[in-house]
Image (cartoon, rainbow over all chains, first blue to last red; front, side, top):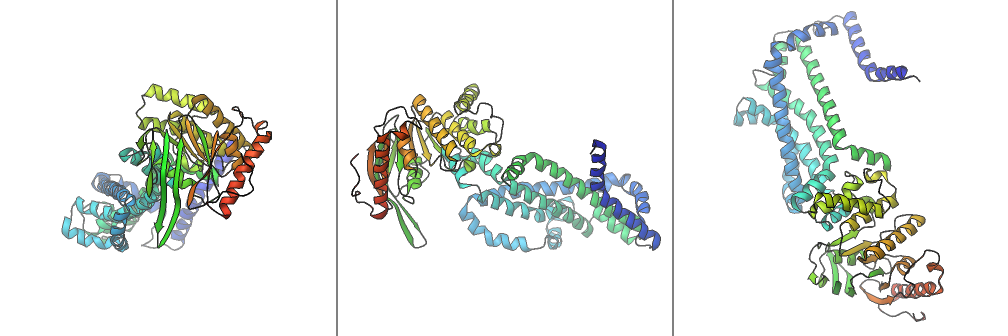
Length: 259
Length: 266
């Protein structure tokens, strides 16, 4: 097969389904026009006007900043606490029941509580995002740190890896596949909570704007917000995969060789 | 160099008490190559881990160069059987060899030189930038040996180092070890279940009894100094020594603590 043909086939594989879905949606909107389900081209037409003008700075950017802040907070706390708990059997025994309980609470239900405690500003949203996104990071880190191979751990001891060196050169790299798995789950949870926190009580943000459009019956505009959220999630997931490839290249290759 | 006195190790857990080592007394002189053999399940690995400071003995003590071992001592390197699990998969071969030297605060240029020398000594001079999982099992174990050698240890401990590789690789690695030992004279204690290997490699073979374990026999191997896979193994004396050790181990399995009946005097 020629290079061009292979590229075409690759593009078809990646873009085939999205193109098909949009085409189907378009066909449906022509066949059964509905006020609530606008055609794709109407949504595309308003998208630029709605999101790439003043709202880019007023709503999109604040949303992304909150998302990032909450996510980074969850990641740092999750990895730090998870490492401490994973390394200490006693700490694990003491915290396990409490962790199981807190993990079982659906994070959105914390929004009213956090609103009371932290107010309505950015800090509240960041806290909501962090409080939900921390769990997969924390629990995966605990498991990853616990599961450090015994022989590898003995080897590290024999060669004098202690304290911070042990943490940096043995424990964290060994746990990194699981930590990354936790961070990946946390990313989607963070996006969901960003939207929910903004829907509750907010004067800015993508979630706030979508609700606003819905109340004002600006249906194509509302839909464009949903599309934007989808795009944000998709791009973040791509960025995450690039990071994963850098951090875990040894892990993937190792699994391939042993498969 | 290495003195083991009255070493006892009892495992306790869930209402079960297992006496792995009853009382081991053993001295390894500077520059010696000693092989420890014993029936399976006799606590060879427990002994090695106690010597390495990875396990705390229940009673007795291990002294390295006069100092009591109460944790992994500096100047001791260990090569484990599970080469695949003892190399850091996220580091390259060179980085694996270099890591202990970093922790030992060996200056940079000297570190690079040591890593290169050690890799060259095990025949992996060109594999430095590969990752361990890209290498065969035998090559991975060579990396582990290179790491131990580069560390410039006073004592090298090896726990069934060649048990998990194929026969040909095993013979190569045995000769590699002998070559390194001749050249560097590192005090070496090697634990194995393979009697042939013990007799072939060692100047002294220590035979352990079944658990609860004591030293059953301490045998001087009076084979010619230079060993060869074909010549040494076809030496009648090699066959005698191996039969002698084998007799002890078989006796240890059936009736621990008693000297074997009907074995020839070595």
